[in-house]
Image 1 (spheres, rainbow, N blue to C red):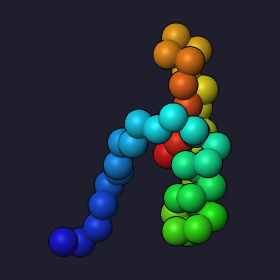
Image 2: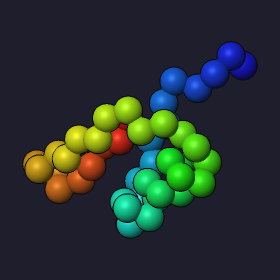
Image 3: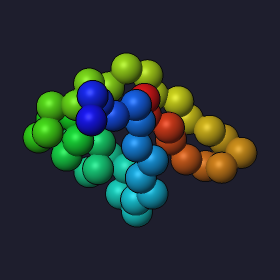
Image 4: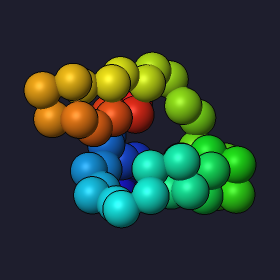
Length: 44
């Protein structure tokens, strides 16, 4: 495997999950988008 393009994760606590993947695992947060129609966030 050469790499991973993206992963979709559904979670109940967005901020906690974001901290885990960005701060603990070191994945880069490229863009964060709030989707009002879904009342949810998308983090690239």
